[in-house]
Amino acid sequence: MKVPYSRILVYLDGSEGSINALMYSIILAKSTGAELHAVYVVNTKALGDLVRSHIFVDQEKAEYQEDLKKDAARHIRHAEKLASSKDLDIVTAVIEGSPHHVILDYIKMHGIDMLAIGPVNAIRSRRDELTSENDRMLRTAPCPVLVVRESDDIWEEFGEV
Amino acid sequence: MTLLEALDKNLIKVPLSSADGNGVIDELVSLFAKERNLSPSEEKSISEAVKARELLGSTAMDNGIAIPHARIEGLDKSSVIIGISRLPIAFGGPDGNVSKVFFLVLAPKDNPSEHVQILSSIAKAASSQLFVRMLLSSKTKDDVYQLFFE
Image (cartoon, rainbow over all chains, first blue to last red; front, side, top):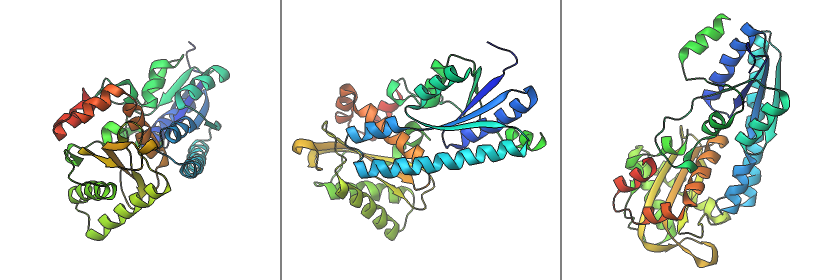
């Protein structure tokens, strides 16, 4: 583990929680001089599983995949804009696959020493199949994980940096 | 929003009273419309969207579970409406398999990621034979709701 962190990765999933994590990561990278990476994962694993379970038809899978790619592009543009507003360089990527596997591979491949994610769920169920991608990353990441809670303070702090 | 966050005890009906697939969709949409104070035209439009999606290919799995779904313009958040039928319903399942458990998933148009995540969680839960057996033996909406949170 390196302290201070030199490469921070923030996982974007299209949720407001992941935007908060992004803003917090920008503040952190700005104050520590760390390199910031932002990755959006198009969950093609889930799309494939839904077709195999007969929940999606092929046409629907193609439409969702296209929509998810557009969503990814929108969020990556937003990440670049937010970083640029604070004069911070950011490395961005859109990758397809199973989110927690893709993020773990990215961490290893790019020497990431801290992962930032949006909120994890309160433990309301012991059913493994209901575990979210954020929960899986928290449990399996090979580096320290920063869980950013939803809070208005982040917006205020971001404005002040 | 996750599946657990989308669940609402007031959006569960046990048992369903309809005897056919379109009737089940109407019954579940009606429960949603009543709970969300939707107008008759909004209710009709949601029912039509779900039926139109089923025409592309049945969402019935081979284990008695069907997951009809649609993305709806103007919806502010995802909802999961659950119904359990005592009667086997022909819902276009593979090899003529009938369905008894229905998860109707309605999602906003502009959040494909969330919709995929919720559908995926239901599909994973439905792949557990024990979970399906427990769902089928549920007698009340509280039984069904509790199954997800135990």
